[in-house]
Amino acid sequence: MRLGVLDIGSNTVHLLVVDAHRGARPIPAYSHKEELRLSEHLEDGGSLAKSGIERLGAFVAEALRIAEDKGVEDFMAFATSAVREATNGVQVLAEINERCGVDIEVLSGGDEARLTFLAVRRWFGWSSGRLLAFDIGGGSLEIAAGVDEEPDVAVSLPLGAGRLTRDWFTADPPPAEEVRKLRKHVRAEIARTVGDVVRYGEANRAVATSKTFRQLARIAGAAPSSEGPYVPRSLTRERVAEWAVRLTTMGSAERAELSGVSPGRAAQLAAGAIVADATMDLFEVDRLDLCPWALREGVILRRLDLLPSRFDQL
Image (cartoon, rainbow, N blue to C red; front, side, top):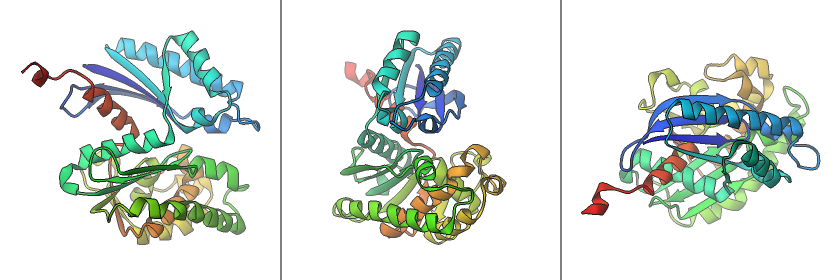
């Protein structure tokens, strides 16, 4: 089956077309994405501005045309924190549905954490034992842990790299006092969740997903994406702590010159590094293994699980 999945994130809107069937890994066939930065289109009252709505609607219409051209048999769309938290999010999606004829599911923060965990579990397998998974998005930080495909605990915190950059930094690079205040805020928020997560047991493997962690791993010396998804990549607490300091002293243009850092993500990487540093420190994780699968793949895998299997007829 050829499946089209539209992922409406806080930073990027991404259409991924995959060839897949139940019990097999989804094989990417086509990818189309654009950095709409919907979180930056939120007005003071919390509503998504007309400019953001128009850009999103145009992309959805384009994605549907592409999906048809690529022979997509089944199409699904979901949105995360930017749309979820917009005061007019329901109206925006209703308007897009009326215009384009597509239902867009809004995932809760807990759904994001659980589906990302599913993707991580499927990638690393049962031999990894108890997994602890972290994902830093544009609007939120997801944390999940467990021994099965459904985590024992799934937490979502409003500590996304884009959100924190927008709400806490007034200059580029940010003043030292703003960095200190953000660091204090992030650590206090994460510390409240540590007990709820670790009480289920010590993790056998700690894993990170998302663009923020991948970029941090790359600038810390991990293999580039051009070497493929099967090359092991990891990130140590020592290196994250080092870069969490260095990145706050650099401007966006300087960060964008680092290996693996895209110009569109450079502005929020310092805040993302502060979150990564706090997460690894407070959960006492010395090393994170990078997982190439994340939320989008979790959504795909859950959809495939619902398809009929040849064993159903036995």
